[in-house]
Length: 346
Ligand SMILES: Nc1ncnc2c1ncn2[C@@H]1O[C@H](COP(=O)(O)OP(=O)(O)O)[C@@H](O)[C@H]1O
Ligand SMILES: [Mg+2]
Image 1 (cartoon, rainbow, N blue to C red):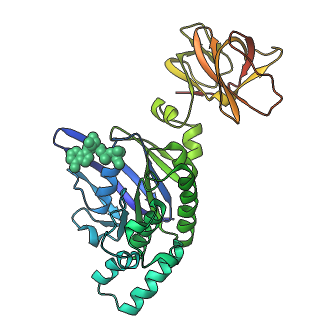
Image 2 (cartoon, rainbow, N blue to C red):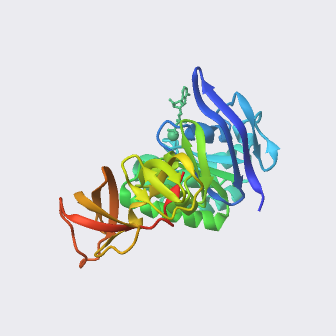
Image 3 (tube, protein in one colour):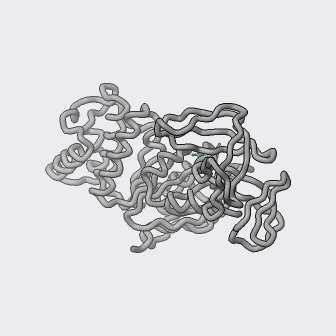
């Protein structure tokens, strides 16, 4: 499948603030693609650039093979749903949705049919005569979506569309968004700062930090194979131990050693281990077994997260909570196993 968006060497500055730094991203047709990163890292700026509301100082932007940098927003075939919805307060739901079609001088019959069609898609048929102030946050969100998809854009752009909703509604809207995406088969670019939301909804994710794309990939690949510490840390809890590799053995400055590492000799590197890849054992008979002392624990429902002191390193170990496993207390001496095959070196 071909790409529908090519972002090439894009730079955007506001005065001295260099907000997007040589950004390159390709987005496949029909993908659900997410821009993920902390607040202020440039996600909205890039989305607005694609929509035509921002200019870059350098670089190129292709939509469906056509360079669009000089085109106005309405000439680009993209639809942006703003973070605050931006509905017209004095227009009914139906009028909010038909507005874009009336501007395009589409015949009245067709407008009515298309408005009804999208109202049904977002489950708002019964509320078409209401005004925005008579709607809940979730309903306003659906109207904003309907208003954008009714003009049948090639690309749907969503700027943190779920951030104003409460947790339960947010989960429900995630599912609805995915269903809508499957039905319409429309390329969607979704912006969020929430890694869990990004993982649950995306085909592919670009991780941003301070205007620089850190890594692009499918959620599971990014989680398992982070290319740098920012990505490793942003996508969930991880143990990072600094040290070096000599003859297949990782050694930290604090005398921790892990053997059977499949990596070349390296002077300065980090060993990355997810907390769920360390397991408690009763009896050590392996060279990947270690002794430690419990420093603290957190009960998280499905798992218990322990802080464990290992040769002056404070590491995190997650133990699945099933109800019958042994639960450790502070100062307990424990032994555990680190699977060197699952750990990563960067
Ligand atoms: N119109 C603007 N004028 C000046 N600075 C801006 C403008 N829009 C965004 N910025 C700055 O650009 C940076 C990135 O902002 P933004 O793209 O909104 O980040 P994000 O959406 O990732 O939170 C921030 O430092 C922000 O203050
Ligand atoms: Mg933003």
